[in-house]
Structure formats: C-alpha cells, structure tokens
Image 1 (cartoon, rainbow, N blue to C red):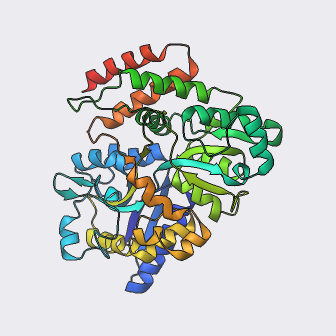
Image 2 (image 1 turned 180 degrees about the vertical axis):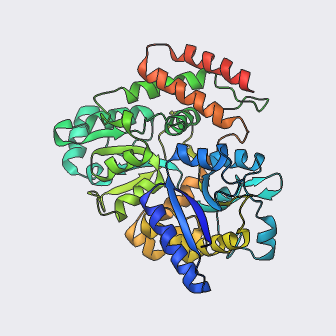
Image 3 (image 1 turned 90 degrees about the vertical axis):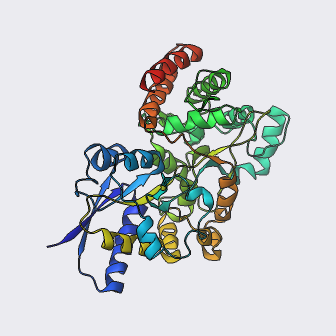
Length: 407
C-alpha cells in the first residue's frame, strides 16, 4: 500500500498535531494514503534526514528541520525548492501572514526551502505569582535594597535566582538545559554574548569568538550554571524539553528557554503553574541591549520524494490559519500573526501576543555550511568550562584555533 513518510521532531504536541492534520487533510480531500510518522530526537532527526541522505534518497517525503540545518540541507540538495509550488498555489495569505523574521532563513540562493512550522524565540520565563507576592517583595527588598521585578540585568538574575532557591520546597532559582546536544548550551552562550554587545562574527564576516565580550559571557555562564545556591540540580541532564517540563511542574522561579515552554505551562495537563507564568525579554549587561535568538522549525519536502505534489498540498493545508492555531492549542507555537493575536489563544495563554515583541530583538545564527561543526566545538567548549578550571580566555583561544582550521 502506498504511504507517505514524515520525519517528526519528537515532542508530544508536534506528534498529535501532525496526526490530526493528516486525518483532516485526508478527510477533506478524500485521500486514503497512510502517513507513517516517525518521531525522532534532535540528533537522530539530523542524521536520518541529512547525514544519511534520507530526504535525498526518498526515505522521507516530509521532514521537520530547524533553521540551524536548512542551509546545510539546501547545499546538500536534500530539500526541495518550493518556489515553483508557491508560484502556482501559494499558502494562505503568503507571505504577509507571517512576521518577516520567520521567512528569511529558508530563503537560500533565491530558493524557498521550507514553510514555517513551529516558532517561539528565546525569552525569560518567570513565575509571576512569586514576583507579585507581597511577602516575597518585602523580604527581597529588605535583603537586597531594591524592588523585586523580573531581572533586567544578569547581576539581578543571579541575586533573584539565589533568593528563590529553596531546595527543601523543591523550588530552585532557575533551570537551564545543559545536556550537551550541540544546541542548548551553544544558544545560551550566544545569548550571553549578544546581551553583552558581542558578536559571533568579526568585521570580515568570519566566525570569531576570541574576544573580551566572549570571555565575559563564558565567565558568567559557567559561574551561574555551577551556582548550587541558584540552579536546579538536574540542569546538567536536561535538554530544553526536560528543563521546560521542570519549570511547568513548579520546580523553578526563572528559566531561559524557548517561548513554547512558557505557553506549554498553560496548556498541558502536567502543569502545576497554569495562570502563574509570564514572559519578558532576556536580561542584559547594563551597558548593552537585550537580545533573543530566533531558531524555528520548518516543514520541508525531500528532493527524493515520489509524492512531492501531495506533500506540498499537505504543507499548504497544515500551514493555514486553522492548522497553525491547532498546533498552538496542542502545545506547540504557531507561526502566523493571526495566531499570535487570536483572542481565544490569548485567553488561554495571556502572554501570547508578546511574540511580536520578542521577534523585534531576535538575532539569528550565521548561515554557513560549517555552522553545525562550529556549534559542536562551542558546545564542547562550554561543557569544558562547566567541568574544568581552565580559564575562559584559554578555552576561547583554543576553540577559535580549531574553528579557523575548519573555515
């Protein structure tokens, strides 16, 4: 029997949404083709689709790819350029239905290599019930001499995390995702760098992390992550999903994570903090501005697929305003402006409309074929910083030398 194969990023809301969308799509179009949807962890997803050429050889018809990988995938000729399909039959309200920052990264060499699937830049997620508590406010002011508000600076972030750290109540000041998977700690390092006015690129547009802002970034990060008076003790084993779940279970006062994990607190059954969560911009160095990171997920079609037209028709269906809203209600993050401003969604997730604000400060990672290798090196560097006494200056110098060799 004919079937279409979809490589899905393993995450409950993604899996349930895709299944519901496929069933609705078949019903609406009177199609009886089965979709085999295989949920895969990050590393396996990249390996299956790109490294092992699964998209190119026809093993996968559709895949969730994130924007870190799309440049690589397009260069490998693994993903289909959707431009001719869009010209013939564009997705609903394309491109105006999306914020410009969700349309750029899949545009490579005049081609369009995916449609936005799931979004939500990095932000500061906090327990508003704790921050609004009068007794907490008084105790904090007495201890630190200033009013308790979500932290605007990294110095305040540390103080507030230590203040709320109460292991005896299974409440920790903050939670990080420190599992070394080539993503979370790389993103955290970038955020620390950008909020101190630093950059990943030098004046020649080449990757260069051997400078003063990077030393400050790595110094602060290794100190906060190893601060037992502030951080959830399981952070070192957590990926972003596990860190998000710990926050949803009420185990932390602060988290730096993707917007999606804040909205998840309002919609999943396991959440113990419904109605007690809010988000704001990330803290920053007092002399510099806030920043966010925009990495988003795309629907892509494999160049080896024998069902390209059917796959595109499904992508068109999945990215309608209704499909986008369904993803959000399931616990993912819709990409359309209509979802961000939807009254029903904002009633359930009161901070949903703030997505537009986060996108105004959202930066992106360098689009270069070597980025996945560079990310791996940064990941190893941050891990070494957390687990050794080697100075940040030396670690950055050594990592930059290895990066130069790759470039």
